[in-house]
Amino acid sequence: MIRLDGKQTSVALKNEIAEEVAKRKEQGLKQPHLAAILVGNNGASETYVANKVKACKEVGFKSSLIRYETSVSEEELLSRIDKINQDQDIDGLIVQLPLPDHISEEKVTERINPNKDVDGFHPQNMGRLALGSPCYVSATPHGIMELISRYNIETSGKKCVVIGRSNIVGRPMSILMSQKGIDATVTLCHSRTVGLKEICLEADIIIAALGKAEFLKADMVKEGATIIDVGITRVPSDKTKSGWKLLGDVDFENVAPKCSFITPVPGGVGPMTIASLLYNTLMSAKNEIYK
Ligand SMILES: Nc1nc(=O)c2c([nH]1)NC[C@@H]1CN(c3ccc(C(=O)N[C@@H](CCC(=O)O)C(=O)O)cc3)C=[N+]21
Image (tube, rainbow, N blue to C red; front, side, top):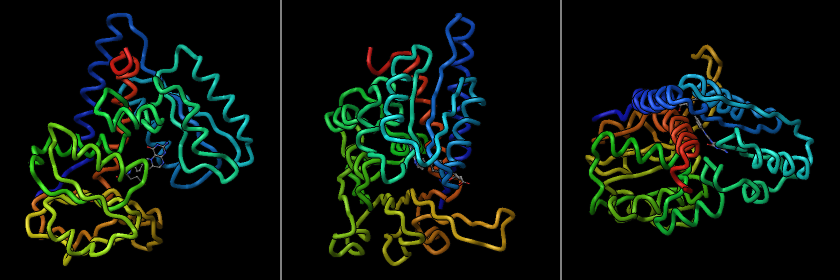
């Protein structure tokens, strides 16, 4: 069993990015600049955004964190997005999800200039993804593809089961795994799937992205499978310093011994998500996607 070390791989990817940023600086080009909007004070969102800002510093990016109270109006948020869209210095903009109920995530996502949509959530980027055209690939799916490629995991002709059909992970993952060059045969499963266990038992690669702690059990996994765990659930624990423990969507302890490759939580997909966001922001600064 080989652990897919997202921590270490994200450091490698960040080093490559930092090198390129340094080179661009020598050429007199400006620093890539990522802006993040955070609404309210959801604990998990705070951690993720703080990690993103820290990662920007590590690679030599400029970052701007824009905070709003939960009570901010949709109109005010949208007009701030308009302003950032116009700002020549800002290459990438993300609005951290989830948003409060009175703000439409759809409207917010659609308002971001697709050229700056380094989250890859805009319909233009999602549509291009489906068509196989150049686009910003959302950070978690992009990070997973990087892990698969850097560990030389075979995908061609393999049976891949994706569990969860969210717009930000499951759906784009199913598209990426089936695209030309990757060539897996994909089954996208969700809460109405009948016979999930039998479907999983056939899989060479399982991507668990349904958001239920320790959902995927050892009796659902074929010997030698590759398991990618996208879940991250916080549960109270008196054994950790923070008072919290992080659980993935996979029952790691029992599943790991059966696998050829498996991602841990934490230290798997999470750090790769952050590195991929930086990668997309560098692409934007270089105008590599929309020339
Ligand atoms: N507009 C938007 N873009 C996102 O990319 C986005 C989002 N909204 N909303 C929430 C999800 C979740 N997400 C994570 C990022 C980093 C870790 C991460 O760094 N995880 C660490 C642990 C961090 C911890 O201590 O919680 C790890 O797995 O090792 C996890 C999850 C980005 N998301």
